[in-house]
Length: 588
Image 1 (cartoon, rainbow, N blue to C red):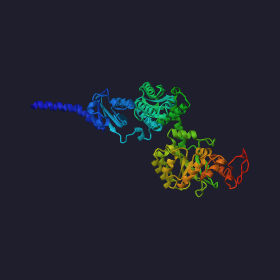
Image 2 (cartoon, one colour; image 1 turned 90 degrees about the horizontal axis):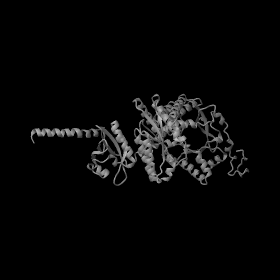
Image 3 (cartoon, rainbow, N blue to C red; image 1 turned 120 degrees about the vertical axis):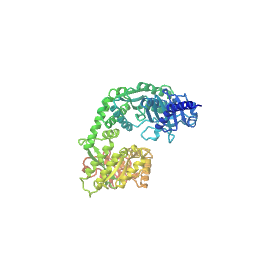
Image 4 (tube, rainbow, N blue to C red; image 1 turned 135 degrees about the vertical axis):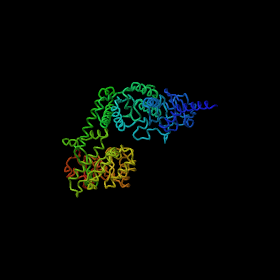
């Protein structure tokens, strides 16, 4: 070969390298992977590198000309299609999980990254550290659909809506309802049910902006954030077909959607927008529970967001100004009737002191404001205690903490600062953890509990015995006291084995050095029952409703029940039983 020929050959090689290898190495600079694919605009494979034989049973060279979609499980095809579209449209996609079909064994979950150049796509796939569904690696996701929980979705959606509005892009939020889902679920076996939910989740994530832009509201109801021109009717047809494929009768379900117009979102901050979305979804969940058609909701869902934003603003004002009152209810020694401490409860209307704050607290939990309220409540209680004699043991108070608040850095930091500023409160304040089901990380919860106990504050676990997880919490959390849920007490009183169960529970706690409080003690009979079962303390309407005035418990209502000679009969015959004085009928 002459010199000119060698030069021309070198140039051709150089041109080939610049046109082909350049693109591949640019893609590799953006995607670290086990497998690399170069696709044309139609999603067909032009080049495949990596251990495809080990992963898929096929050599990379044999995949040339094959559709990329044929490599993934049928359930993930909608998501894979959306990934390809997003790669071409936006230039890049990252963070999705697809499952590769294997000739033998379970599908293989892979992290996907993608990059586009000159109308073609470069897809990188990396094997996940654990062969599991992606959702199981993230406590904020539903384990089957892979969709975010409502709280995480609302926060992410608020940020994305705000960013898109600032960019001049239009965005929509759609609520999706599978009508008669309960009936369909009854017809399916577990395999079909799980397969359908995985496919539904993949379809919703594919239609959404990204994997963090869709959520499970409740069984059969979902919401997603999407481009305003997204094909929602196509999504309805797709979900309908999925339900038919998994229905043994082939009937499927009717899919309904309500589109939330986000015009005016530029006037709302992203935090309040997220709270408003949460309010709207929870409001819908309650309405849907009453079998209200989603079609009727679509006409006013935008107003729901506006209403939610308004209520969030008002609630935040109440919290900031601490415009609520403290009601107290005593926790009493089951043996001698002495008041051990009071539980501090909030009241939002001093004119209606017996009105339950349930609606407000539920609203705060649903919109993610409970941690702000919990900190305001702790501040209010310490301010009240600061007006009482510090050398008196008559004013010991338990302050509630939601399990959700324990996971919020701002709450933890705020509470630490509050306690450090009021060291005199040690021994006068204890903390009661409510809504323990919201604790997603028990190790982190135990560290928080340790911070309080190391500072000299005792900790009580509320709602104990109400669910199967209670014993897991008891073994994992270093608490001083557990409050036995009123429903557990009532169930024990009704059941033949109830007394033995409750007695065994209190004995277990005693062996662990944990005291017990039985709540909802509303009658002499329930007091006698929990006494016999070994409960250390009691709380309930028998000794007075929560009151804004602590003097209402001086003297303690029904204090005579703690006198040795005044005991309650085991039978309601209206006659005196040996050694016990029976109350007259209708006078309990």
